[in-house]
Length: 259
Image (cartoon, rainbow, N blue to C red; front, side, top):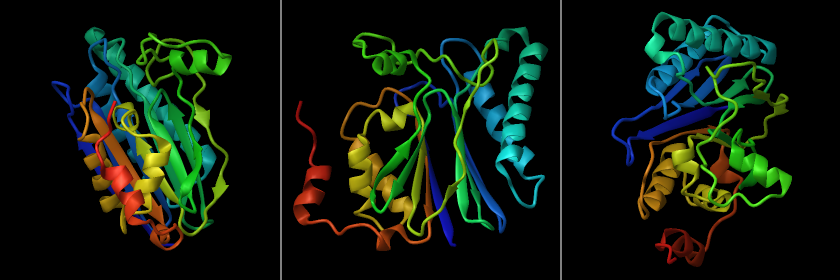
């Protein structure tokens, strides 16, 4: 199955870009990453870079990839962050989110790992099929049925490098379908778009590059207060399995919102 991808990362409204993205694609497997360094303490940018570089290096040692190998790779990645924390006391609290997608090209299956509020979306047949659940206080309140208005959306309880033991979320391996499209993104990206808008944009384009560009255009209509990064991954031919849009649909997506 053919696999293609595209990466977008912008500084947005911040003084620096603490997001790091990465990708590795060979004949046996693919690995795609978005890491968002946690603000509020020094070293978020460094933690994101360490996580991305270490995880890619760990999986690159293999000719084929299994879910257990990726679990081990994430453990090694977190250990690398902790070792860097010990080397420099100023960075002892640095941490990062992680959204990582793995594709086994030999067995035609995919799985993902995430920590924090960077997300992995799967679009199948042009619609949102699944999305990761944020490790945030806002999400905990929402799940419990409590009002979450006014809660700091950046308060996370599960990230790489955080103190204490945390269990990250590991999806089961999922058989791929021709036309599956994945979107990995930081909160600065997904907070500006609904899943329905992402799916709508997918049905208007012919490549992952065009998909990200169209969503970026929609994001640019509003105020960008954060770094925004995304990796779009297409398996097979999503443009041949989604529905055609009418001009009305296109206009609805591209017309600026009115509050």
